[in-house]
Image 1 (cartoon, rainbow, N blue to C red):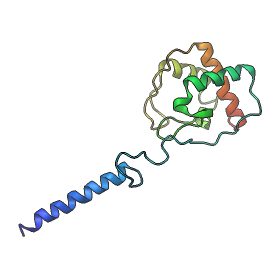
Image 2 (image 1 turned 180 degrees about the horizontal axis):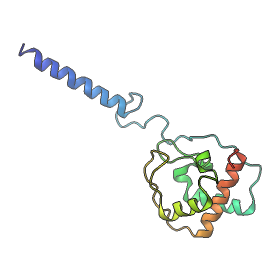
Image 3 (image 1 turned 180 degrees about the vertical axis):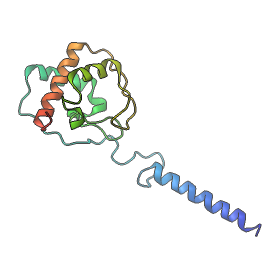
Image 4 (image 1 turned 45 degrees about the vertical axis):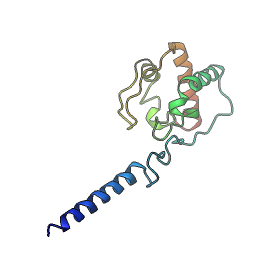
Length: 145
């Protein structure tokens, strides 16, 4: 009976280690490999045929200050940040002021499990307004009003 305990302990330890690696790597890949889908766009975004001049300015601001996390065209990135082209961010739920406050002050996570959003440094209120206009034009093109 005493000889079986070390074997049982070793088997449990081995299974626990394998289980950890499988859950840590998402698909059972090699340790430290990126989780499948991390950084991938979360939604397909239909682009408008043209943007207003102010939204074009906002697109440049978005690309420079927001796309690193929220992805190109605000499509979100798996494991990084949510899509802004999503009904959660429709104007009746998150008005333009919510975008301004989020960029200036950061946001505590409440709709998604990406963690808290830090403030975006170096943007003026006018730049945030242009970025918000760009997002709103993308949203309208994608049926979010």
